[in-house]
Image 1: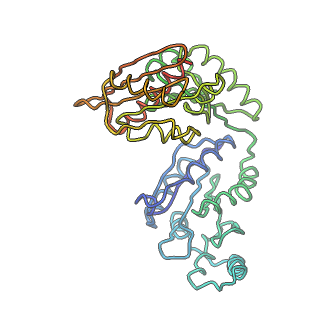
Image 2: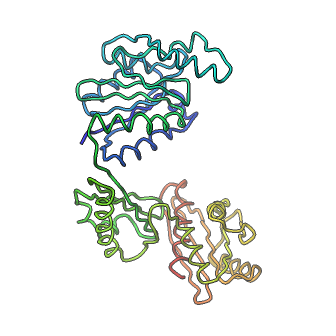
Length: 381
């Protein structure tokens, strides 16, 4: 099975002016084809640095996909950089110029001489027509390796990826396999604890099992490589069952499930409404819950933190005011090098209070507090 690398090109990416979504899309595309992706690189609009990155990548992989740098201006260097990396010249392709001209005519415009640059590609390259944009793409075969240069505009890149690159890769490399992944979500349990529960499963080679820690949550990723989607699904299902047997607590969902979605579904199943009180969280609890459809009028936001006793009183008062069956209160109190978290949970069946400390970075304290509080309420349902 061939391995791949991705090279995203554009100084605007390095400056943070735009977000790189192409790498995410390409990574999922390659994964579904069963192609191993071992490295991604982001580089600015510098011809020599791009050429050097290409030379290095060709020593490691069989498929190199570049995005960006195919526009008509002098700071679109990908065509020249690929040619430089391979020690060849760029050459004018009349058929590409005809395609570019035809595209502009459909827009009621006339291409400039700058656009003529886009009809130049590395000598010997395979041209790839771009029917949804003005930047033609190209593929260069170097021994058993392929360099595939695509536009940086996501819509154009995605179209060419599925309509031109996919058939090419299947022919060139005889692709038949797939790689699939499933992510299990665990809240309120530390990464080290989960590692104790499933550490031996993390040594599996196929499917693989890996952990990714977030503030107040840990993701368990199960990835299977197989000859078919059905086989990969079976392998994942078997490993998922083994993992779940080991999870003592905290598992709430998989893949696109969010803690707030699962919580609100649980409340709905019981016919319970919810009142929220947050103190010192700058409205971040409500913002997150609102994205899941929670009504803003059922939340009380206090800009400063409060004591556990004050939080308890505020939760009971607001719960009564909103005539809600369940209530959750969260207060985050800074204290020198750590933060104190107070949580109050009230349901028709119980009242629970928690006090916990957080010693991590301030930027992570809010999501940690929210995940911890939501999970404590979910466990009380």
